[in-house]
Amino acid sequence: MGLSKSLYVNGIQCPKLMWLSKHRKGDERVFEPNASLEAIFERGNEVGELACELFAGGERIKWENSTFDEKIAQTSELIKKGTRYIYEATFSFKGALIMVDILEILPSGELVINEVKSSTINPSRPRPNEAYLNDIAFQYFVLTSLGYNVKNVNLICLNSDYIRGDELDIHQLFYIHNLTQNAKEQFNSIKENVEHFEKILEQKDEPKCNIGIQCGKPHECEAKNYCWGQAGTLVEGSVFDIALLGGKQKFNRQTLFELFHNNIKTIDEIKNFDKIPPYFLTQIKARQQKLRIVDKNAIREFFIYS
Image (tube, rainbow, N blue to C red):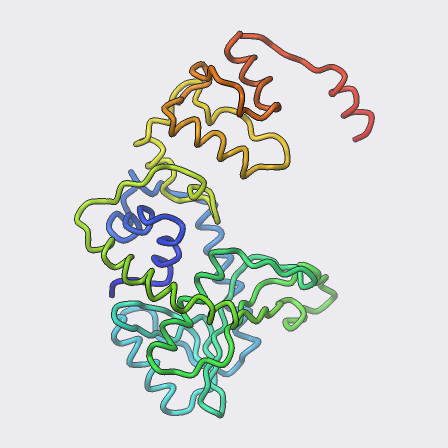
């Protein structure tokens, strides 16, 4: 199988991350062991099991000791025999592979995609992570391309407003966010992306990509240290040692990347301060002039009003 939904999501963030995830997976020089990430995966599995209780009585596709072709065949058989809910339903369209967390088959024959995430969402202001939007839109693309009629595409997250009482209320624990329209709107762009990504994955050598905002958006890249090491950022007094202060975090990061890509890699190399945010200047001055700058009034106000 060529392009899984996780590879697709990685490709949207960074083509190099996608290529590395395909060809260097398991290489600790690229993907260092990450205990916190493993804990997130474990939590995700637990939340996924709880979410299945919202759609009880379904059948699970056998994961261990079976190939993807066998999983796809098993999914097809369950649909044919009228199974209402299938957990980890597996499909492939021209090498694009998906496993739907919870697939619902309606009496009409229409399908409902339910993607489960262990993150929280505020029902009054639902703002799904960009990676989640790409994930479920990719699933919609594959199923629709296979000829299935997909009625709804849902993102299921933990309800941030839920407060547990004596008993766990599974229906209050989760919030189901309908993202069907978003999935439909992305269909044509996904088709183009899939063709482009498949060509990248066929390359023998890893693609060349500059470090940038994508290294931390929509999430911290698992191969960041590998790429940043290649780029030469891990030096004493790097521009990336400047603390990101203020509310405009994205703007701040972009400023640092612009410096770096203009071959200004250390704080000591900064000479033109015209485009430097004011709250960076104090840090730069302290470094370049080897000064210790203490704003006593600011410290005093912090303790008074905090």
